[in-house]
Image (cartoon, rainbow, N blue to C red):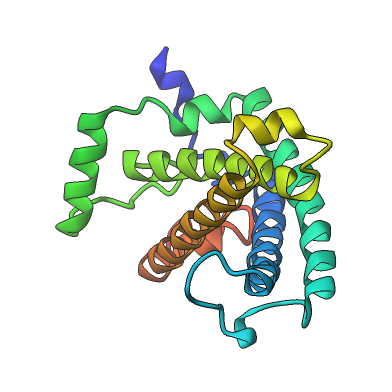
Length: 208
């Protein structure tokens, strides 16, 4: 039965809906992070500010407008992505099984440069863990962001997260984790360029 979950060589590396939602998520995250940095600078949590050249919006009001627009794109596109993954069975097939031993073995193989990328349709266990983590991280970003947006109206959620100031910190650290994931993701794309090609067309990068 397990072999039925393995993707066939005749199937596209990534279905069209996956490629579309991936790039829409990438756009939403780029706008959210850069506008969020501008919002952060208006009321810093810690003893540093983000360089203005890296921020979006120009001023607090402009940054908030960009941030809310990208928030809705992330939420609706994320729901489509999650729904398609669950409905198609892709979530189970691509991201499981997952075990501490498998993660450790694949991580050690990656550090030694011995981790195979022969079949771009299959994720190793480090990739599975990273993608599952970023899905949960995005949920934390959205929930904490809702508290910052509608703190009074969403008082039960605010209290669940430990209050407004705690929600601000959750939002900041979840954003920081997302930025770290994106940075690592870009490094891996640079090391294995065909992973980018496979996100651009139906079968590109298969034999690269």
